[in-house]
Length: 192
Image 1: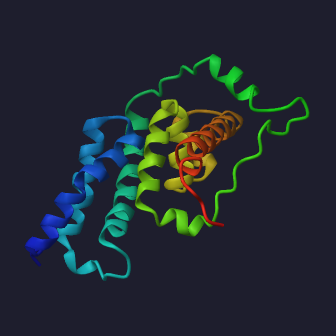
Image 2: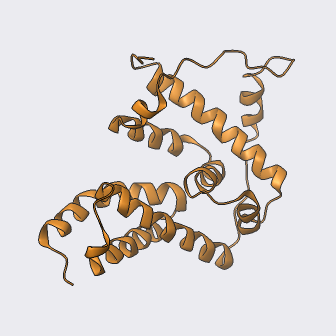
């Protein structure tokens, strides 16, 4: 079945956002383009599989998630993972906690998460916050939280220990929380 012209136009319009999303995870422009291309081809080859039970963007992003996982698996077999954490990161993280382990500042009230997630700008701010993370931390966070890979699988693919993965996830979550506090929740009036 041939995809209708309006589907081609819709997919082309969302392509830049899909590439940015794939680039956040893959950190390689060529791989990101390939993953997006594969996802779009999958939609175009079988347009009747989209039943309209979700938005077209959600449907395409779901397909893209699996294409990204395929790229990650292939890439980890083909090239070694680069190591190199910013040593000053520990000092920044330590400053967020008191001697007893509690946070220095309580997080702001974030309101109703479902309503917040529905806001289009939230994803733009989240994307910017993810881009500010160290590459390895952002990658592990996206693998765990967005691609929903198990920690064991992430560790195997990235050749890291589970304790290292949990530390990186913890640091990524802290930085994302701080970035979202500053750039989203602190900048908007949140109704709870």
